[in-house]
Amino acid sequence: MLRKVLPVLALCAFMSSCKKDRHYEKIENTRWLIGRWENDSRAGKLVEEWMAFNDSMLIGHAYFIIGQDTVFSEDLQLKQHEDSLSYLAKVNGQNNNKIVAFRMTSFRANQMVFENPQHDFPQKIVYSHKADSLIAEISGVEKGQPKTEIFSMKRKN
Image (cartoon, rainbow, N blue to C red; front, side, top):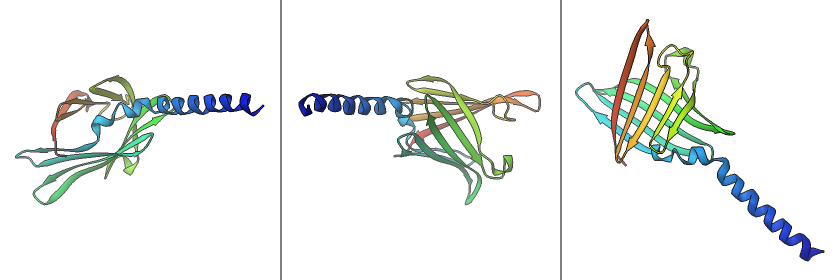
């Protein structure tokens, strides 16, 4: 009896481990985002940092510094739930300090697109990656006018 049950149990354990690996495949494919990204310009210094939190989530922090003052700061999450990815942003001093969720609408090996048509601005966030560069593009309609902002950053670690 044990000789018959043991192979079945081994097969179940193997299949379960394979399923778990595939379960978080979407978040695994976004790991190119992990690291510290910066852009130094005359206007100030933009920093965006990402790290793995667990199997299903990356956490990030972005901020903009002018001189010695942090003038913008946001906490970020990239989270997989079942078969979908969400980009969650909490901007200090905006949206009553509540998290705003953007749903992934497109993914390629080097680009992620997130959208939330109900948000005031932005309604769309695009991350593109090439070699040691990261481009974050936010776009949508603000005060009735189309608007796009592009943030180019270089990997610092």
